[in-house]
Image (tube, rainbow, N blue to C red):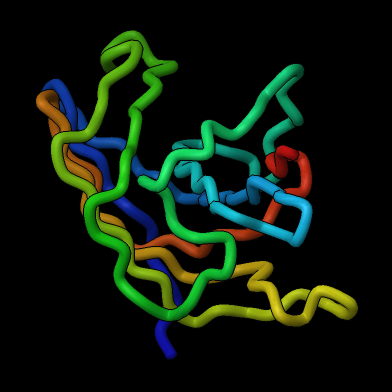
Length: 144
């Protein structure tokens, strides 16, 4: 099995390395109902902090809570530019996510994936993000 090398973003004539990925679940009464994935450029590898008042939108355009090694076309993605050279917020015009090499959580949640390799192809009006990153579960991103 190969190690993911990261995803590359090309915007405004510049290139960004998205070297870390994190995900959280939208939790329903019976467990995860959707998965939210974030790619980060220049992260220190720590989970993002919990956001005050965050809540899932319940939309069907995200991967399911019970991830499988599969391709998930037609999802929604938003680029949040924290660098002045990036757009402040841009919605993707095309999104493909493939999940592979799922790693189970420890008991009692062994039926859930706590890490996986995510291959992404995201197209925005301003540029693209493509590649494979290793995504880890961050409880700080879970919402109920």
